Image 1 (cartoon, rainbow, N blue to C red):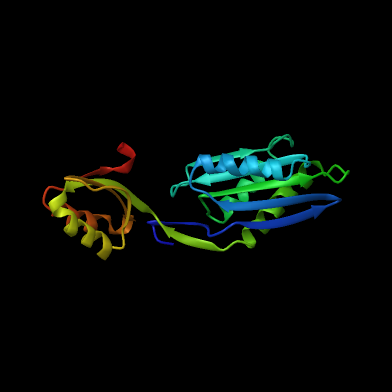
Image 2 (cartoon, rainbow, N blue to C red; image 1 turned 180 degrees about the vertical axis):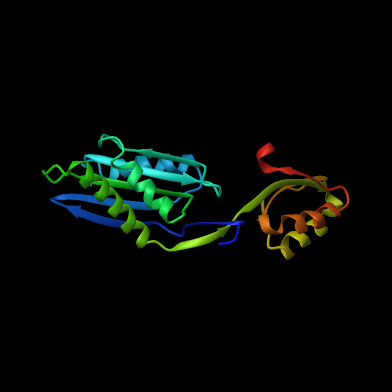
Length: 203
């Protein structure tokens, strides 16, 4: 894996693990922000409203510094952490795994719970397609309308993406491209007459 890339899953996947009557349904999604995580957690709670527990773990960002675990009533450390452990062992980020448990009438004990949540999360990851994604650079550029054709040509040639375009006498465009190409692309853009830029997160 390149230093300017990260591993995640391409699409939603599911894995199921059973132990002594209890059923553990693990759902995994690629996610990019906490709003989407909250939406999926709420959706899962409604979908499996008759289940006893909805435990989860998530990791966000190329640096994998944002994360959280939740045991949802299971003994502390027996659910969220084993799920997170599987995410970490596969080196994944931008991922949410929720494991829904239907109790089967037999207590599994601490070791049994840890094993069950780990196996369920592992099954969901095994059923997913793992991909490498480039770390993307996002910035806002402004420039006079007379430079529009030059700017759009560079963005097209560099396989960049445009968002939030405001075309007027003074144009404003959000631009996204691979971080690995940042220096070359910005050097080209900054040669355009009147162009200025700033990181998108400073908006």
